[in-house]
Length: 274
Image: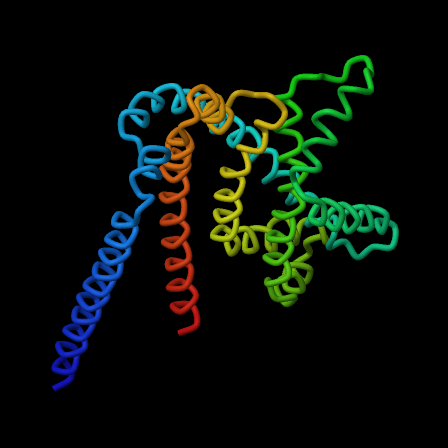
C-alpha cells in the first residue's frame, strides 16, 4: 500500500520532463525559423557565423585563451586568501583592532563601488606612469593585481556571510572548552563558514573567468584581444564567437559544478535537520 503512490508520482515527473522538452524544442525551432527566414539573415550569418572563418581563427584564439586561464589561476589563488583575511578583519570586535575593521569596510565599499574597468585603467596605466624604481610596468602583472583587488572585495563579503551564518553558540562552546578567540575562529568557525560558501565562491570564480578579458585593455594578447585583432584584419565578427565559445567551455562546467555543490549542501543540511 505504501509503495503504490510512488509510481504515479514518478510518471508525472517524467511527463513533466517530456512536456518541458517538447515545448522548449518548439519555441527554439520557431525562433530559428523566424531568424533564419529574415531578410538580413544571410548578411548576419556571413558576418557572425562564418564556418570557414571560425575554423581558421580557432587555433590562434584558443592559444591566446591559455593566457586567460593563467590570469584566472594566479588571481583566484590570491583572491581566496586575501578575501578571507579581509572578512576576518571586518568581523573583529576588539577596540584595539578597530583600525583593521575600518580599513576592511572602506576597502570593500570602495572597490565594490567603482567599475572594474576604471580600476584597471587607474592601476594599469597610472601606477607604471609614476616611474617609481622597483615598481613593475608589466601590463600582465597589473592586470592580475587589479583583478585581485576588485574580486577580493566581492569574495570577502561571501566569506563574511558564511562566518555570520555560523551560530554564536559554536564560538561560545569552543571558548568554554578553553580555546582562545583566535583558536575558536580558526578551528571551529572558519571551517564551517568556508564549507557553507563553496557554491557562491564557485559563482564568483565564474565571474572572474569572464573578467579576465578586461585585462586586454592593458595590452596583453589574450583571447578577447586576439579576436579583436582578427576582426580588425577582415571586418568579420566570427572571431568574437570563437572567444565566446571558449569562455563557455569553462563557465558552463563550472556552473554545473556549482549546481551540484548547492544540491549536495541542501541534502546535507536536510539530513542534519532530521
